[in-house]
Image 1 (tube, protein in one colour):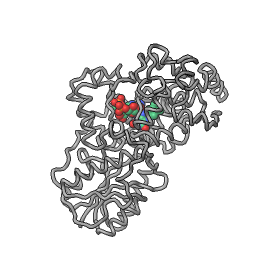
Image 2 (cartoon, rainbow, N blue to C red):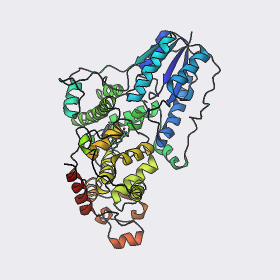
Image 3 (tube, helix red, strand yellow):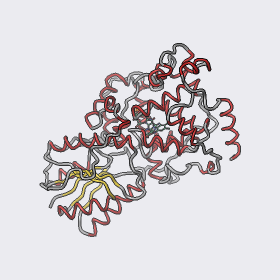
Image 4 (tube, rainbow, N blue to C red):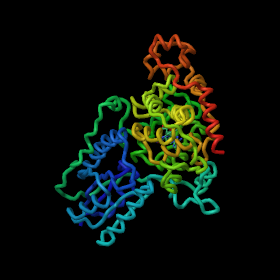
Length: 459
Ligand code: FAD
């Protein structure tokens, strides 16, 4: 009897424990990628779909080396698996665990459904360093403060070593159509430049990791804040699509020739990803509801025009606009810039963090079901272990500090590309008039005062 090996957020062959187990079983395999349309599972945004289409092609190529033809499907998980089992008469299903609560619940329902027809199902670990339902505080809850979380995780001992890709898998012959739902051909016009920057797929992830370990990581602790430099790993989309695992990253850091403090800062960032996922696994409405319920009566404004100006990078704040256009052009944004634009949306424009979270979800190639809402809530002050609401970033000061020469702004705001000197951070009215760069849509001090007044109203 053949077996199904499922791919979802794990588009890789190495450190793929479900695939290793499937190979070890000796059963002939059919590989199926499923875009799960089960109700409640968050549908991928557009930029992430762009990435996925290319990553699936890479996975398809890699699997074809073993004679496996990857079938790509979309639909509710139980239906898609059920129909494939019926078509090929599979007796076993191998998959890796998912931790988005609705996806996890769908997997559990699938396993129950399979058990009723005596189909064996196995779930394996890999997306995270630790099971988010097992790491508990002394009072039995999940951690909602990062530092004790990180300490508790470290005290669990070394992380498991990553597994190699299986040497050999046996393929089952079948005549299923490869891509009847057209997942492989997604190429929206606005994303044409993405391909010049990104190399989706497992080998692209290893290239980014090696570049980081062989040099870019040197000076990461301070360099990670300078927006014009490529001082961070850019592993986020690879992690989001499961082309590399945190276990693989942690293991590779052990041999890296970069300074210990930079390694430690980087490890903590991988720790933040883990923390966000533990929060999501334990809070299914992290993307919808304030984690801190005392914000539930917050008087968010409703202003479609302001939202549109923010989305399109026309706020009149050069750093905010550079960052928003950077996102649109490349599907990615620097972490410091994400914090600034998120703070601007929530505090200067008074819009609900959910509006920004949704826009990021649709436009980021690394859109991540846990990192995105957890970070938006962190900036908005509504989240777990969040920045206090009254800490309002001043976009002009952030720009002077972390884009000192204005190189980041010049790269993404063509109206200002000829401006030199300090003016770049806050061009005069005259310069704005001449270059066609918009005037600020809100005034910083006023916006800050209104934000703080709104905050006082719920306290
Ligand atoms: P590096 O600095 O090289 O860090 C390595 C890895 O650590 C990242 O790839 C990521 O997996 C993890 N990491 C780093 N910073 C964070 C963080 N603050 N929270 C959680 N994990 C982190 N990250 C996403 O992967 N997807 C998102 O959808 C996302 N949305 C965000 C929204 C907002 C408002 C903010 C402020 C941050 C968001 N982040 C998100 C976190 C962070 O900005 C990105 O992970 C980071 O910029 C990715 O670049 P990098 O891989 O070069 O990071």
